[in-house]
Image (cartoon, rainbow, N blue to C red; front, side, top):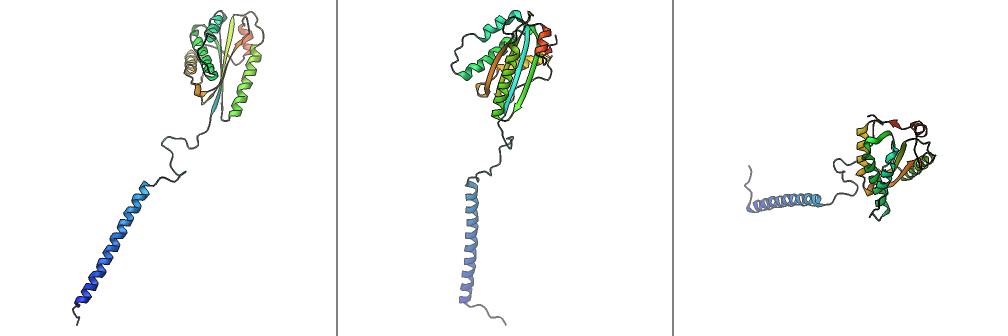
Length: 225
């Protein structure tokens, strides 16, 4: 037969139950505090996920482009004056940007006189390679452009640009609309993107016949009307 618990036994049992409840509450409070601290703690360096759309391994990219346009040599003096007009730009990079923009605008203004067009480009991910490619392109076109004229009626203006980031190119060398878009892209060139720019005229004086032009610049093509 079971005996009823004495008052002392009831008191002891109640005290034991109270301790268990206090321990459980204390544990719950501890978990809540840990969660709050974990939420407020900064992320571990190097473990933050990249923002949406960000590349996994961003790399420096450089771009070399060569634009060559042959047009009626009667308008050469006009283009030269537009390109070499006095400028208020003081820094060398700004002056180069202005050279590119003026050249592009001058050629856009002569779209009705365009005859033959050439374009080449090269993507480069190394600064040294970009500098070397730019220097090689300058040497090549200066050499070919420095040869004398043959009494023809065409002048060739070549614009050589090296930039950070890829520039707009063309898919067809005979499409006027694409040439327009290409030159308008160069008008929008910013100083932060430019590494180097140069304009080269061919010939140094006088003009070229189309036969001689094609011999010296075989990469150029007749522009569709």
